[in-house]
Image (cartoon, rainbow, N blue to C red; front, side, top):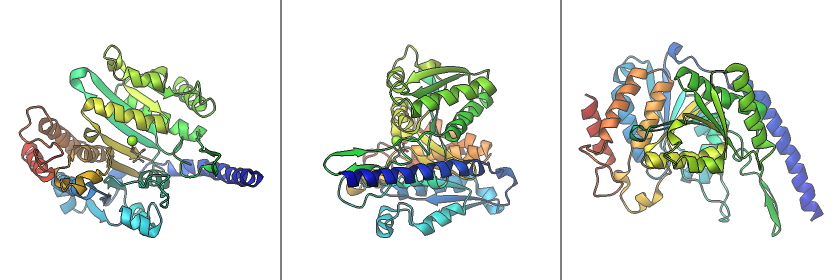
Length: 385
Ligand code: IPM
Ligand code: MG
């Protein structure tokens, strides 16, 4: 027992030192890219697993369609990156194989299909989720997830901290076999300040006033306590026009389904795991996790992805072509907006509203009774014209 405790204590020291070193690199990595002044904007595309290659194929069609002129003029390059697959990751025993990560780092922005994460506790090699590894390697600290249901008066934007919290050391907990396990949660001052600033800048630039800081600071006193405090201090100092509210995650989960108050919420800023959970709830209110887009934004890099998983069941059942590409199309829209192509983003957004409305002529159901992913894209192109 003493040996286990000694090893765990040593591991804890290593982890602490690594995390302090990470905060020292943060300022450098947080510097933004000036997309307008690039010779060629390189958009990398990683297909991922399961239905990933199918929905990414359609997302690339959409990009090529909307950026035809810019691609022809050499202003934009769409670069397919192979190898971010479960098979390759298992073979290389790495959540992102080195050559794949190097290729990704040559791009400015990345569009990524869903990647399968091997489950813990199965005895197989416990590979870290590729998503989590990419967010960390590219320092994509803001996970931005908009949810909009105009008929219910809902227009929410979630700013989920994306590189810390329960995730950053999620694969590096300690264990005393047959006795206990211990995972770690990390909140840093700089990490909290930059996610709060991103949320507040968004609010300021988009005429939003209501900000909800969502934690469980009554229980996670150190980490969430710090998160709530730093968010509040930054707003009081630099964004006095914003109206801040502190909420606990449990009651916020209830608020989102409470029609009496939910439409007053505008911008949410929250630690990683709560953001993960509550954005699925919010997406469900909008029509399902398949309907939401997700942007992972850092300074040097940004990655855009579908919010749902790789749906291996659909592939097993031979219905992969019937997958719904709406979520990855939303991610494409966010990518376009992020790099400053607002007109193209607007075109896509308008066409998506028509193509996903109740009276849309083509409907994807995720099964053989609906349209295929490709038929949906064709319908979208016909609508854009
Ligand atoms: C998400 C997903 C990921 C997460 C998984 C796939 C690791 O649920 O993007 O919300 O937990 O962040
Ligand atoms: Mg999630």
